[in-house]
Length: 79
Image 1 (cartoon, rainbow, N blue to C red):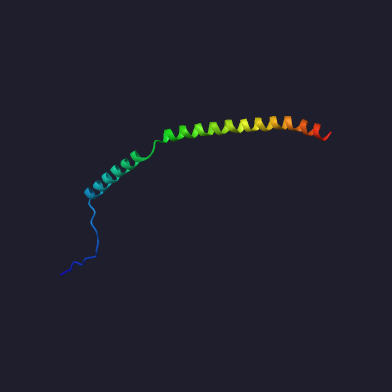
Image 2: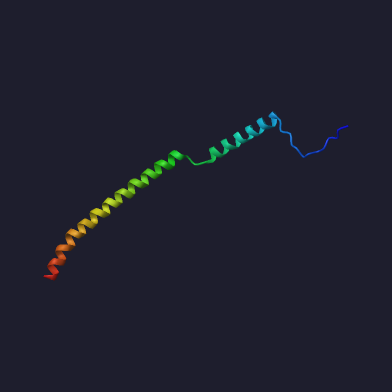
């Protein structure tokens, strides 16, 4: 007579798989709802980039203005 040996195997039924998939789906939905709005972050990022670009051009213009004013002053002072 054959003896049944306990091999430590685990039986997973289709019902168990379905329940786990449902649980994972609910968890994923909960995580997705808790994340910040990506659209708002993109808009904020665009605004910050525009401000940075404006400041960069203002700085370039300011440095150009200083170069145009300071160079003749230095020439007059050294002459």
